[in-house]
Length: 205
Image: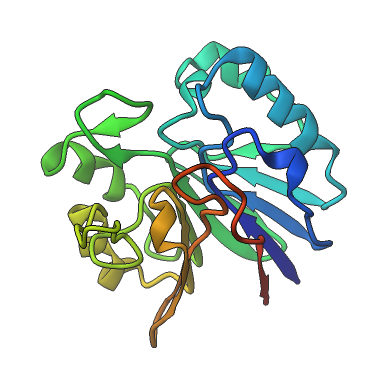
């Protein structure tokens, strides 16, 4: 089975060649301003992709998905995961869009107990964890050396031990880190100037 994984496309989805595969995963920031027009444009494009399954976890730019009534308008062939799980082709996925912040952006939660409540929901048998934020200290470093990932997310990883942890959010840290228990993928495709710099990752399972 082939997973095609990307994040942080910020309205540039039409410019990105998408490889063939079985499950197409977007880990957030499909839009830039989170408007209805931006979101509908992305959803139409995403729903037309030929992959058998499509999973979307929104990001901090994707304000449209914060309203429950908008979730009901999503095309039926797209699975949107907002603190939810899903089993496809024998794989157990869990997705959450929350990111550390002071509510200036979509799905922001304060660091500490407030955001911890979301990570406490992740089942221990999760095989593919999809979040928009990275965990603290893992592919989360910006150009000045500051780490912006989530400390509380990092704390649940030894408990859950997913096979794969997919995320984005921190554009300069795009890349892969392989550890004994978990393979980490920062899927951000654009640089800080919103230029397409990377290609979607292909994960063969």
